[in-house]
Image (cartoon, rainbow, N blue to C red; front, side):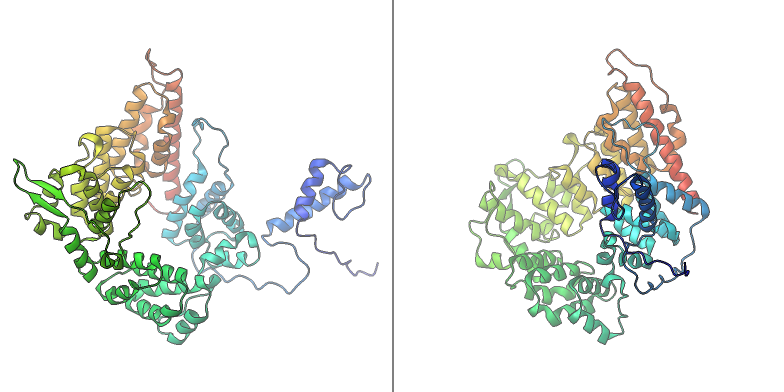
Length: 540
């Protein structure tokens, strides 16, 4: 021996899969890669698996010897507290169960708490332990809902690791320029170079970043290359103007109304109709106003609707889609688009100086009410008009669980999104108190976390009523899951009395009480775990 180490070839890219196959089939049927068959094969398989495991845990795919990788930049953020780091490791190693039927036992679902943990850690400004970054990226790879928070928490090192392992390439797509810092707004030459020569993802990130800080500068940058962009790119760039949309954008959007792409024209029209003072909004107000009037000839004032008889060139030029979807009448289709795009502020003057509540309360002749109110719903959401949203939602305890314009849960949810957080929570709490939880899941999804005290109390009371009714809890598993993530942890002590198995009545489902007790035990343990997580992160 001369002390010179023997060169070792790097394993094939699929070495791990070959080793797993050999282990499953047995070395007598499949010889492990890189070793001869015979009685030594099992030991060789274990040695190769051990070496390959080390390579996989290192976060770097094996390869031939090359120049040493430049180390990752230091993370200037303070490190996680020790207890919080241990908690993160637990959250990342938990795997959701495969059992069905809604019964999960009393243990919290740790993976469902990971998004909340990441949000709190990002708010507190901590840096992650480097040894947990591979597991964090693996979790984000499997769940797109985690990616934004996970990459923010991982910082620049996520991009560094993603360049070494293609399994994490989503981090490169999510980072502007694949991790390259965007130029300062004062560096006009660098901005122009990146805008004209960068990849599409880099250009979108650049335009969005500038739009968030200086809306006019972003619009002017877009105008320099607008005529030469591809249609699909123009659509994406135009969509970025939603941020900071203002009257100054109107001339550019009016120009986009003549674009050769129908989708670009439609998006420009939508943005212009979101500006109540725009010329397009005024044109739509005239058209929509001509379709609706108040009839005073009867005993009660009634709204009359006369939908357009044609979609003329002017309407199409302002973004009205002429061809109706299958099963939809052309006139009602055109009418709905006009009302949706008309400024809501024009209707009180048009309809007798009435308030939104008074207008919505008017009867509508000839079965046009659903179409008219649904269009007003869309307009209220587009224009972020809380007054009209309240009128269309109606009282939460109203019959049929909503106002006349809220024809679906999806529309109610969108209307609620125009209200402030506290008002939104109060409305949903009133809805649940009056109508129970059967239709509340989608509405709860738009409420701020943690839930306000009235909303949390309404949810818990409704769950208690469902338990006392003797039904199985599986019908409410979605709401129970939301409660685990959204109920204020301080509510845990109020739930202690619900963890016991209740006495079963004669008409109760067999064993339902035990399942409910289990569900409430899981809820309480999850709330207490969330409280501990917040304390470990210094958020309380």
